[in-house]
Length: 79
Image (cartoon, rainbow, N blue to C red):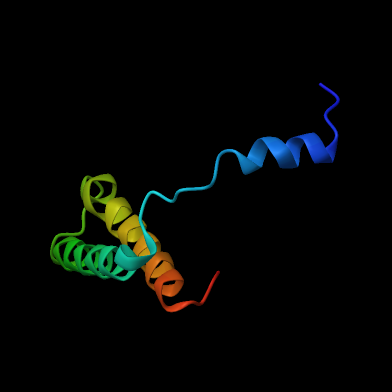
């Protein structure tokens, strides 16, 4: 279990990091997530009830949050 930093570095060199969403498509994914989040937020605003919070409110806020992060990463502003 005692690995030296050099051994860890050598092991990591054999497996490069491949992101799930490529650099060229981050802006598109972020923009679509933001649009979906804003659309769901509008539907939630029309019918606010306790039932709609887990069905619409939480997914809308997650879509807006992840969309914002992907848009910032696509333009080079890292959060």
